[in-house]
Length: 180
Figure (tube, one colour):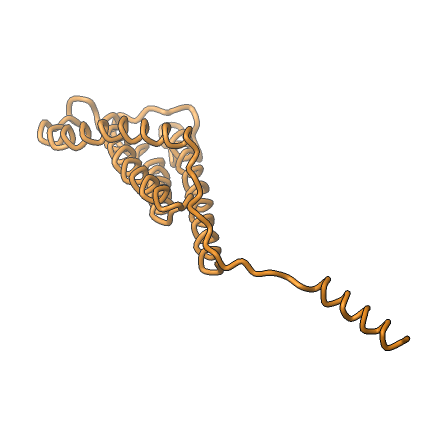
């Protein structure tokens, strides 16, 4: 009797610890329609703006626009041009990666981090230009001297955080793909 009871318990233990391994690849995850529409619209609008920036930037430099508009206004325009061009490149990377079934991209992370670095540097550089007027949100200022313009620094810091999160998401996605 004991022998049979021990075998029954052993068989139950084996059944409890059995597991199945599914080695079939998952199909590509579908991208939500709303995301596709927003991405397409963003690509069109940013692409048109990028073409305009590429066309107008040499003209602005040739016409020495900074003399007429002022150094601060010209620096703001250059900051906008870099933002549009880098954003357009990032959107193209997003579209390419979404088509491949990836939600996160290392290239996108680098684009967002680059924008964060540019904005953070601009927050220190723009207050040094002639004709600078306070934005009202300054960091370490005294009379006419402003060390950092907080209005430009804040988006730079937020972009750095966002870029770090995207980079971590891309790393985790790559790690998951390697495991599977």
